[in-house]
Length: 101
Image (tube, rainbow, N blue to C red; front, side, top):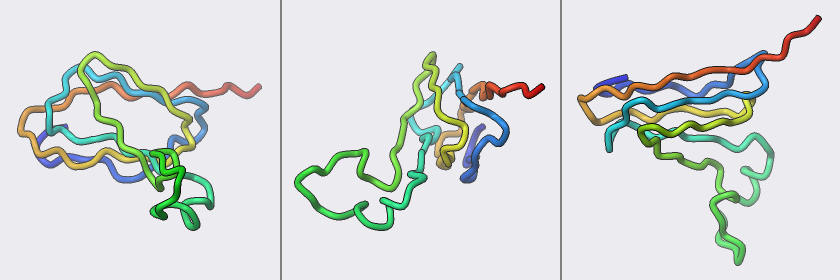
């Protein structure tokens, strides 16, 4: 990805675990954003409570770093926010699929 490239919200059907390895990332090449999949986002997210914590948010951002590998459940909705860097972001995305016999 380069320039203003991004990936819209999606999941990885027919997979168990997904991942991404970052070969080259620049400071402004976009963030990985994960979204809650439960109904709590409609009730508690955004409320100020004594237990405010990133895990009570409707989404959480991950800032990619060169040489880092992340794994996540394939059914978690996610996206990559637009890059504001002209240098390319180079990553390898993959899925582990269950083979049914």
